[in-house]
Image (tube, rainbow, N blue to C red; front, top):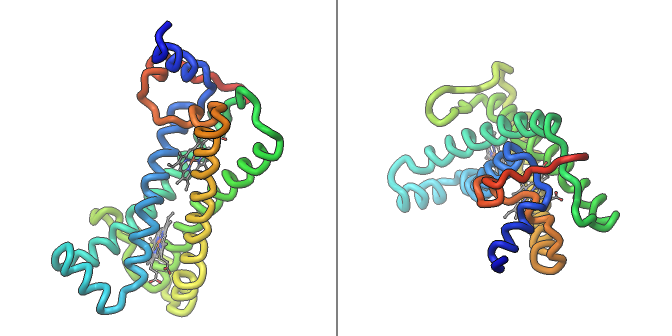
Length: 213
Ligand code: HEM
Ligand code: HEM
């Protein structure tokens, strides 16, 4: 057996998250990576920032970015609802080989915290925008503003004092999470990484998803 066949075989044996869960994981990861920088740009809505963004990307670019941030945030919320349903239908795979008990506890805690934050943070943004009251456009197609009246003070509090800090927490936990994934990949070489590799690779075609827990 060649080295590449051997590697393929090893990946095929590694228990993985169900295809749908891996797809949702990478879709949410991509959107979150876009949400953090776009959020910081739109939160600096002083004249200078607006002018700088418009000068770089063209007139009206700041407003497009603002609407995209809201649209992508609502997309994260929708994907997270699907993720909760997918998790209920397709439980986590076993760790093979097993990982240390503390690693299991720590990773479980980070995963649960990320699920919670990825649901609460967009809801806070959505409610904050709706109370302002400002539109909650979904990809320029439809305004999903919640019909909850106007309350400028609470809106500013939610957007300025709650939404931002929660998003920072997402960034911190995501960074810890990615470092942990790299540790498993580069130092432990224990196939934790393979549990979440994107769908569509060779081992997938071989049909591997073994799940038990
Ligand atoms: C997981 C989803 C989301 C993430 C990670 C995220 C992240 C962020 C970040 C990092 C900021 C900058 C905060 C600051 O510097 O004060 C921000 C600002 C903002 N976000 Fe989000 N956001 C998400 C979803 C949403 C949604 C769904 C909406 C509304 C529909 C929204 C509306 C806003 C608004 C209006 C601001 C500007 C707040 C201000 O002017 O102070 N976000 N977001
Ligand atoms: C390059 C970036 C990333 C890599 C390499 C990565 C890798 C992984 C790996 C290997 C697992 C399986 C861990 C295990 O089962 O113990 C996993 C699970 C998970 N990841 Fe990531 N991840 C990345 C980005 C993100 C981001 C940005 C988020 C959220 C903001 C995230 C949230 C999660 C969650 C919640 C799980 C638990 C499994 C689930 O229920 O979907 N990941 N990730």
